[in-house]
Image (cartoon, rainbow, N blue to C red; front, side, top):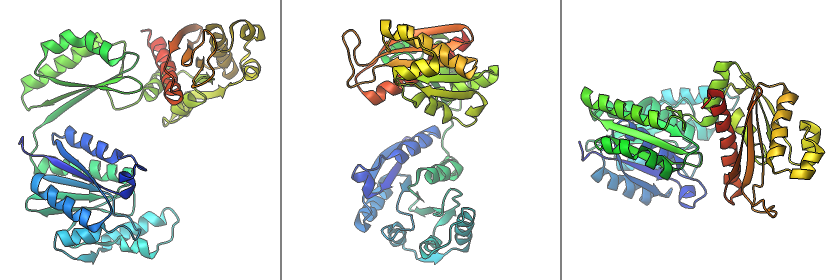
Length: 414
C-alpha cells in the first residue's frame, strides 16, 4: 500500500505563465489525502499535444491514479480529448447522454446551443462518463495497464463537483484504501511558535499521532491524521485531540472546515443577536467577509465605512473634541465609533476599527500598522491596540479577523 501514489496533471498555458494560480491541485491533494491516497507528483504542462502525451506516459509508469484538469472546454485550443484518444488508442464518438446534459444545462440558463457546445458531446469511446452538473464538459474515466486516469474541466467549481461526487469514493473502493481518520482544529489569535510551545508537552505524550501545524494569515490550523482500523488507535487519536482542545480552548474557534466569520454568524444565530460594524482601518472588508456567509441577513444589519473625521462625527456621533484631543487613530475614538454604530443600527453587537493601514500615513507616535479595534455586546465592551505590519492588504485582513475574534470571545465570555 505504501507504494500507491496519485499524480495530478494540470493542463494550461495560463498556469505556466503565472496568470492563474493552481488552486485545483491543492484541492485535489487535500481530497486524496483525506481518503488515504498520497499525491506523489504534481505536474503542470502546456496545452500542446506532445506535452500532454509525455505527461500521460510518465504518469502511467509511476502512479496508480492520475487526475488531469484542464483542456476539456469548447474552445478550439482545447486538444485534450483528441490526445486522450491517441494515448488510449480509441476513437471519438457522439454521446447522446452528454448531449442531453449540455442542452439541459444551457436551457436552464437561457443560452442557445452552438457548435462548440455540441462538440462537448464528442467523447473517447473507451471512456466512462462522469456526469457534471456544474458545467457542460463531462468528466472522463479511462484505464490503462491497471492505472486509473480521470480527466476533468479546469473550472474549479466543476472540478470540485466531479472530485467530491465521484472520484474519491471510486478510488477508496477500487484501491481498497485503509480507513483514514482526519480531525481539524482552527485557531486564531496566537502565533504558530507560541501555539507549539503551549502544546509541546502534549505532543511529546503522543509521538505516534500525526499532527501538522499549518499557519494562515488569520491563525494556525491543526490537522490530525490517523491511518488505522484499530479501535485502540482511534481512541488514542480522540484522546490526543481532546487534550489539545482543552489546552488551546481560548484560541480554537471551530473543528470544521469553516472560516471565523461563519462561526461567529452561527453564534449570533444561536443567541438570536444582531450585528453592525463601523470601519475605517478595514475599509469595508469586515462587512464583505460577514456577508460572504449565506444567510448573514439573519443577523447582520449593516455597516458604515467612516474614513473621514466628518463621517465619523456625522454617522457615528464621534465627538469633535475626541478627534481633536486624541486623533482618529485612538482608543477613545474607536470606543465612540463602536457605541455610535450600535446605536445607529439598534444592534445587539457591534465592531469598530480605526488605524493606519499603510504603507503611508504614519505620524510621530503612530506608526504604520497601528490599529485600535473595539467589540461591543449590549453594554459590555472590549477594546484592543494592535501593531500589525506594513502590508496594507494583509493589515486589513488581520484587522477584520481580530474584530471578529474579539466579538466571538466577548459573546462566549472567554
